[in-house]
Structures are given as C-alpha cells and as structure tokens.
Amino acid sequence: MSLTPLETHIQALNRYLNFHKVCWWIIDIENATDVFYCNDYMADVFNLDKSLSCHSVSNTCPIAGDYLKNVELKSSQQAKLILSQYQDLLNQKIAEYKNYFPYFDQRTNITYYFTSRAKILELNDKGETVIIYGVIEDTSTIERQHQTIKMQNKMFKELSETDALTGLSNKRFFMELFEFNFDKAQREQTELAVLMIDIDYFKSYNDYYGHMEGDQGLKKVADIIKNSLSRKTDVVARFGGEEFIIFFTGVSAQETLKLANLIKKNVELAKITHPNSAISDYITVSIGAYMKIPSLDDHAGDKFIKYADKNLYKAKLLGRNRSVIN
Image 1 (spheres, rainbow, N blue to C red):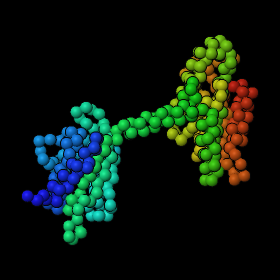
Image 2: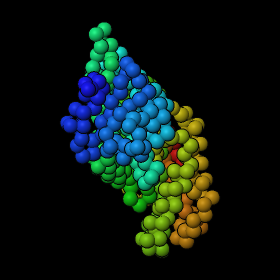
Image 3: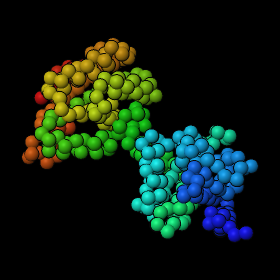
Image 4: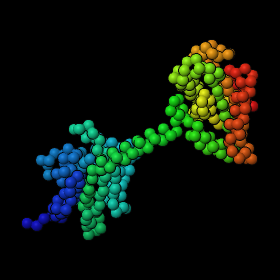
C-alpha cells in the first residue's frame, strides 16, 4: 500500500528531525487546515495528548489558534504579527516564517523560550501551498544567559550613574545629561535653569554628630530636594560634598525662583536638628540659581553652572538660608 504525500513527509521528519530538544510539526493545508501532526517531544513539551495521532491547530497548537493562553506575548499586536507572518508563508510572500516566543508551562510554573521556523514543504500543480512544516527549538538556556547579562549591564550602568550615598545622579552622569540638554535648549531657543544648593554649616554638623550621622543628614536633604521636583525632566544630582545641583528647561525666572524657595522651605519644614548652625536650630540650605535662553554664541553650558555657583556664594554672603537668582 502506497503512502500519501503527508505520510511520506512524516516518515522523513521522524527520520531526520528527531533531535534532542527539537520539536517538529506538519500541516496538510489542502485537506485538513486545522490538524497538525508532531513528534513525541513536542507533545511532551507542550503537554499534548500523546494518545492522539494528530492535534487541533485552533485549540492546542502552542503558537497558533489559542496561542494567547500559554504563550506570553507582550501585546495583542505581537499576536497579530505572528498570524500575519503565518498567512504570508501560506501565500508564499515569504520563503520562511521565523518567530521567537516565551511559553509558560503550567505544570512547572516556569517560562521557557523557543525559536520557531516554518517552511512550505509541497505545492500542488497550480502552485498553491499544500503542506507546510515547522521546527521549534528550546532556547531557554541561551535566553536566560541573555537576561542575566542584560540585568548585570543595567545594574552596572545604574551604579556608574548614581551617587552611592544619596541615590541621586552623580556628577559625571549629570554633566552628560546637562550638556545634551544645553545643546537642545540652544537649538530650540528655550530657557535653561541651573540651581546650586549647599547645606549651611554642614562641616559643623559633621563635627557635632560625626560622619555617619552626617551621611544620614545628607541623605535626608537629598530626598527632600528630589521630592520637591514635580517634573520627570528635572534632573538632580549630588555635585560633591554637601552640594547638590539641578537643571531644568522651559521655565521662567519666576518659576525657577519659586522652585528654589520651595526646596529651601521643605528643608526647613523637615526640622533636621542642627545644634551648631549659626542661623537656625535646624538644617537649612542656601541656593544660587541662574537661568536664560542659551545664545548661539554660548559654546558650553559650564558658564550656567559657574554663574549659579556665584549666586550661591552671594546667598551665603547675604546670611545663608536664602535663594539668589540672576
């Protein structure tokens, strides 16, 4: 008894593609669009009924039909893309269908990762697609390695950009962001403002409490400054010692001064005891601000920081616990 073309192909797939951790499937598009055959390994991996000789595409195929049940796609848009590519293969618009998908196994509560490829295996006399087949490979180990490396890179990046004590941006990262935004403000001719903030008489605070308590005081002030900012685009960093710096764009001089005074007020309201301050029983800050629209003649943003620092010095000369803006 001669074999049908489908049976011949199934025999060939069993002979040549039964590798470890490789699933294969085949569909007779011409006669049974909703039926697929697969090897035992695929049945084991995707929890299919091994007593059945074939399975339903719409109900049990892991990457078609009911793929949203266990396949962890990021969005319905991704699901539509998978279906679109599958249709392109059937219509011979593409030579090979390729897909990558995470699969949640409810038996183990573990997500595994697979790479799927499919090709046309046979055409009829009219040149229409008759039989297609696909291979699914377990790439979980490689994917987990990629995820670990990605997580480590993210952690290292965050460490290189963050001040270890306060959790704010560090000076180096601040300057990178500042130079980028300075160029942008110069091109678009929008306002750019810089605030330099210094904790008043912080040396005497350290002398009284010691450096460990001094570090806690720095962290408290850093949190107050950060929580005083309302826009995600405002950038605050520890600039060194007890100094902090902020830059923001698109605000007026009045708004700049208003933010400076808000920070100063919030620090006062926190009532962090400072027995050795010459002006208050609590920690206070002095703030120097500088803002303008960068002219096309400005070659760098350093002068914004320089002028903000000069205004900070003026605030100290005027008695501290105050804000000065150009």
